[in-house]
Image (cartoon, rainbow over the protein chains, first blue to last red):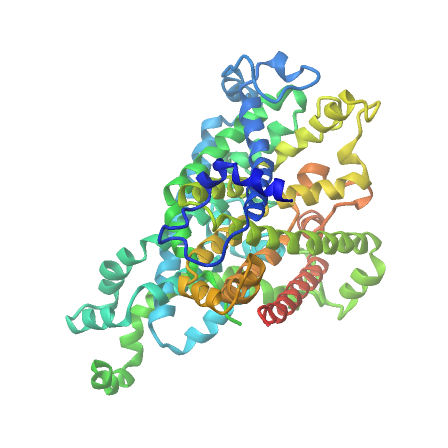
Amino acid sequence: MSVLRIKMRRLPILNRFVADRKSSDQRKRFTRSRAGTFFYVLFLIAFGLFSVLPLIYCVCTSFKPIDELLIFPPKFFVSRPTWANYLALPSLLSNMRIPLSRYIFNSLFITLFTTFLYVMISTAAGFVLSKTKMKINGILITGVQMALLFNAFTLAIPRYLIFSYMGIIDTFWVYILPYCASSMGVFLMKQYIDGAVPEALLEAARIDGAGQFRIFNQLVIPMVKPCMMTLTLFGFQAVWATVPDGTIFNESLKTLPTIMANINAGGIARSGSAMAVTVIMMIPPIFIYIITQSNVLESMNSAGIKE
Amino acid sequence: MLKNVNEPNRTHSSFRTNLPNYILLAPFVILFMCFTVIPIVSSVVLSFFNFDMINMPSFIAFDNYKRMLVGDKSFLVILKNTIILAVITGPLGFMFAFVLAWFLNEFRPAVRTVLSFMFYAPSLVGNAFFIWQVAFSNDSYGYANSLLLSIGAISEPVQWLKNAEYVMPIVIMVQLWQGMGVSFLANISGLQNINDEMYEAGAIDGIRNRWQELWYITLPSMKSMLMFSSVMQIAAAFSISAIPKTLAGYPSVNNSVDTVVSYLADVGNVKYELGYASAISVLLFAMMFLTRTFVAKLLNKTGK
């Protein structure tokens, strides 16, 4: 045991990862056992590899030429990278009569438009629920909290009925409207405004004669930017990956996830192109995450549900 | 102060003073009603009817529920699959989302940022889970097969996704791979915001190791965050359908990984038996709601 402990102490690399004990970030608590820290690092590395290896494999495969795709046993990394799989995408889709650019446009348009609406609608509602004392607020807050439990998948069938009554099946609205009704945005925003926007400030603005719209526009929106960034991430991520099940039939209204599934169904010979579409699909959400992540980690703190 | 002065005015024309508030709230309330409240209420009502969207609904009382629980053999298998998946991936997903965040909390901010990106990446990229289809593909080009073939553990390729025995564990693994989600981010954020003085006070009061600190300080401080994250995990665990549908197809071999949500799409969107689909939805809502109540009770016991 003592031998083990000495060995642990000789692993200076551990110290480079673990926070500096003297920094204000870490507090004087109790001595952390080296074995414990070693176990932490080991576990995190194992889980980290499990998480990212499939994604790295996907990127590698998307650059493999055809002979490397068919090699046995398959190799993880690519030895002679090529853009062929990406360049082959438009011709793979040529028998569908809809060009690839149309799907990309649909995906981007729907996702950006929905995310924008979602963030604005949630912020406005979150502000009212947090800072006014209207009678309906109580019921709405409880309703929103309960509705967190039910996502688009579990509500698919009853929503399908509503879509058909509204006559919006086979239109862009089936992508856009349901997500804007997602309770997560209002919930997070209401909680965030509770903590981040002091009542006294709003009162001062009111004394200066500002109306509710002006307060919302000029005071609240700048103060809740971190939470708006968080909603942008969640909105973008969810809408980008949406596959409309049985509500979109017109090929020209479909989005990238649908053609990803189609290409993927083509078997091993097409696996390079399938991975290429997947890589294209991965880039936007990862980009949004990198932009928003510090805001997300700051604002998610207010997400707790008290029972 | 100002409030009191304004009070009589406000009661006088409370609608007019509140008008801006109503306008700000309206878009959400209308959409929330249309796409969440009315769907839930209408499925409760429709579950007592026979309805196919062409003929008028006819009232059949509890026949849909009887058919679901007694008459429909494949539904019982599917219900069992859903419960198994939920019972395994729900708690495990919840634990991983907390434990990983808790481990990460000990590290420098830069390391934390990189590692949290790595863990969150699978949920970030949405539909990319079909990469696993390549890993477990049925021919010898599949990763699992070629690995086992080359070390001589098997002599011919295993039909991973066509074999009822293997397909369930594979779906569970992929679900956990993608299961970090929102609750993981919420946990990281919550842990960073626990007041340091709590830990210092705890150390003075005789807390000696990580486990005591976890049980007596961290978990009680995180209670409301854990409730949020369990709600997210319940929502995810009961709505598993895209992963088994993509990996094993629908229907899968012997219905071995078909779930209630994938069955719903079949009954509702393909066979148009919407009364029956509504009854299944109601059962699903009830299971989720009961689980949530149970978890809330359980979480109130932490730190005691």
